[in-house]
Length: 603
Image 1 (cartoon, rainbow, N blue to C red):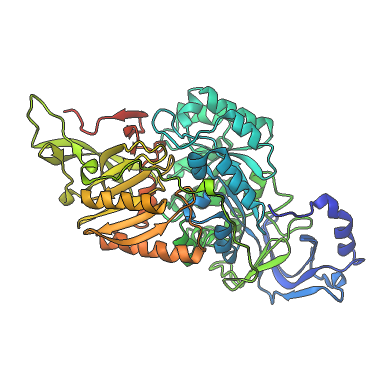
Image 2: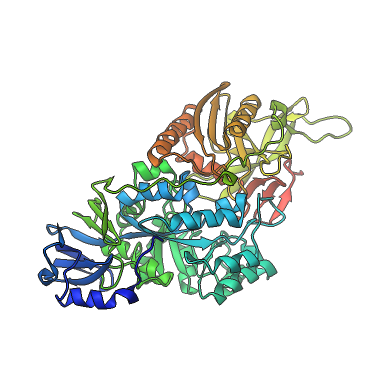
């Protein structure tokens, strides 16, 4: 985080301000205090601020005002603690940490807990350090979770770099590291994998939080083993029973609303209908692309959505502020409007619709009425973070053909193929089987069944290798292809299309620009978002990237796609730690059994 004086260095000054012996830097007058500790809303409240921290909160802070004190009239609007995103990946916004902050500050986000495991899969520990150091320059509080699973599933994918217990132990000494990022290799935890347990042990020795990622519906013995290993939160629940099980076992249930993950509505019923203690539930986004951030919002969007599901406004705000701070052990820094804490305050005229009218972080007004009021300098990434898309050769249409098995020199007319089934607005997929035509020994896509081709192109070592398969759910109905170098978690290049020539064009185009997302339709490029930093992030301003991302979403639709936020779902099709079926550089992966399986199912 940006350099700020710790509370212990300011105690005498804060006391002097609270007692009226020293003037405050700023006093917010006549607000409605949203007190997340007591669950009350207290009208007629003043807040005195000194040195970026809160000195006094009460019905009259007039004694704290001096000749140079800045006065902010709240006019009976609500004083809400700055919002916290408990788990998210900056890279999913397709922008740098700086640009992500620039996009979300006007929406009231003043603290983020980021897991940079996307860049870790491309650049390793040096990539994590880049984002850690960038975060430290910003005016809001950005805590970094050290990525844990690089690769996410050893033996099932090949990342561009790897991280182990030694790297985790080193990172735990860095000032901005808050804990260990999501422990995605959940089978490794409950089967006793030495590497996973060593990483968790290093985190425990540092007295920091282990993030969870239990992406299985099995709440029996494997789940109990996973919890016993040490993860203390989980954001992968999609059902009400998932949230309940986590809380009952002493974990924090993180309910996410990202650009494509809608997991709040189902799980929040544990509070609204079953009466579970809301203190053990936390709100987060996980993944939000730049179009969502600029057009719809960030944590303000999540809070509004949670309220719409029946939560009391004060409860939803607690789940996006104090609950998060308590979980990560930083409650004496952020999460509430109380003495000694950083002066992170949002002023809003309504708690249900939550218009964000003023945003203050560390005592400084950063945004008003949706616009930044201060400048944040652009952050430059070094050359080693660029030029990471290495194809090794020019790809051709035939590279995206899947060969049918041969028997006695004869090929079948059709085959039963394993097909990845996209589930709209959820991270899991379905393991489908479809009868697909064969012509000239090549398995064909079948638009009548909504089955398109999918390919994963190796891009870290320039091997030129391509893995082919099939996917259903995008609705593409014209000759087209989409390609992305954002392909969780190893971030090879993923290509989906109905035309192999367009698939080759899309892949080669991303090789030319150093990474990104591109859409080709009928042989012509119709959308491109360049992501030259590790093939994951743009070096342009957030609003520029958002405009390109919006055009990319439109281009998907022009190809027949009706999915909500299809790009986000595209980016997860290689994520071999979430059931049921995925694609990797090793082949088609059945995540239910953690095995590479043949593309053609045996009958």
